[in-house]
Image (tube, rainbow, N blue to C red):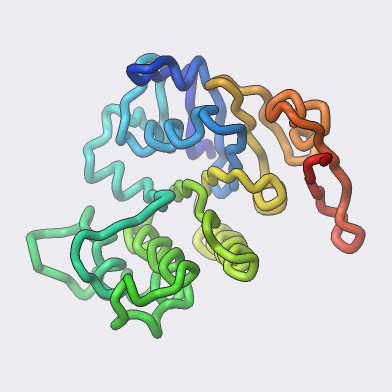
Length: 258
């Protein structure tokens, strides 16, 4: 079943066109890694998929339904977003932040149901953050905070999870933990995941397929071994690239040639 169908998407800001005729399909339960150089249109693509922005041209379908015809509540129950930066204006605990993910199901302000508590508690357990429930967000480390933000998205009980640079500013150990978490969520929840990342090795290692953007256009889409070729990446990034294989796992490894 097709979770996402994007056809001929175009979008411009005041300073020019950011996406130009982008088309792709994501199957249900698939992890799609979106990669490309700065200003390729990756974050804008996520904003279109979550309907924060509307395309100038083209169409998006989620599980066969036109995105533009869904209510805001339906979109929020289908798509959850983990942004590149998550900020709150007031001191909230991890429990309160995760409970915010239940807003699409709210019956009224301040009326939390047993189902809301169950969903939030499950999200905390799945992300290994239940022990942080009573701590304020600004008391958490970068890795802990990121897992709480992912828990908030899971509390929405979405079918599609969009992540914008979820491992940015994290140390190596926390990057690995986030990748393991995403792999587990795919297997256990059957989530469709679309992940924007500048880390080519991480994207290649956790994605079923990759979408490489350059200048707002799709340069290539396919399995990691089809996309992660030196000639293709050098064309996209404009620098010499070395590609090898992990001797133990046989996975692709990408490095710039200095």
